[in-house]
Every structure is written in C-alpha cells, then in structure tokens.
Amino acid sequence: MRLRTWSLAAVVTIGGACATASEQPSRSPSRGATDPATQKAVFDLIQISAICLKFNQPNQPGEVVLKGVFAEPGSPARVVDVHSTPGNERAVACTIEQAGRVRSPSPAGPREVVYSIPLPIRADDIRIYFPPAKQPTIEARRRGLTSRCSRRTPHRSARM
Image 1 (cartoon, rainbow, N blue to C red):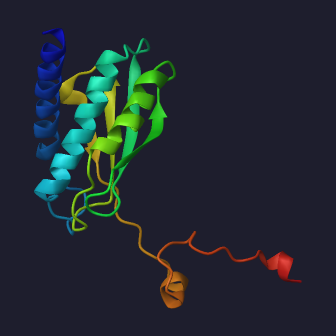
Image 2 (image 1 turned 180 degrees about the horizontal axis):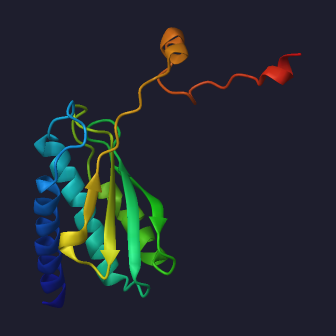
C-alpha cells in the first residue's frame, strides 16, 4: 500500500511539473513543440528520477540536474548526471540505471533533454530544457562526418 501511495504521489508531482514546463515560451522561434512521443519519454525519465529520489532518501537539499540522451527509435534512453548536489549519489545512480526502461522516441524530436529537480522536490520548480541540436562543422560535412569527434586529426605541431 505504501509503494502505491508513493507511486501515485510521484505521478501527480510529475504531472504538475510537465504542465508547468509546457507553459514556458519557446526560446527559439524555429523550434516548435515536441512531438507526443518525446513528451512521453521525457515524462517517463522525470518520473523515474522522482521515484528514485523518494526511495533513496537524498539527505542533502539542493538540486539534481540530469541529461537524457535519446538514440535510435525504440532503443533504451541514457541519463547522465550533469550537476547534482553532493550527497545524492544513490538516487542519481538509481536514475541512471533505471533510465534504460524508457525507449527513445522517433527521430523527429530532440535528441537530448536537460532537466533539474530541486530537493526537496517541488513539482512547480522542475525545469525542462531542450538544447539546440548540434550542427556539423563545414569540414565535417565535406568529409561526410556527423560530429567533430568522429575522426581525430593530428595536431599541427605533430605534422612537422
């Protein structure tokens, strides 16, 4: 019974946070609203994080900032700790471990999401941010590479 109560409380908390996040204006006029599959994936990541925070009893007030990374559609999502208050490592580790249950959404949506959860948890203060997609450099496009780290080039001083 107690587990059901915590789960229900987490769902209500997260629902309020997602409603608050959707009210904020978009910072980039070229980016529209995220598709429903991406919204669900983000909701699931935040819900897992809230449950891990509740059951792992973080004892340090502060903030947990995590980044969700989506890969190919249907593959497991990954979560990375961006910046979290020391003392909450067990809850962050739980979130990173459990994030594999969330499936990556369709490729139409953003590939990354950064979200912060204040401690103690207050649904109105959960923040969600979709960073802009990284554009390949001109040189990478010319070589057919998709990111700067796809192929290493020797340093200029090493060529001499």
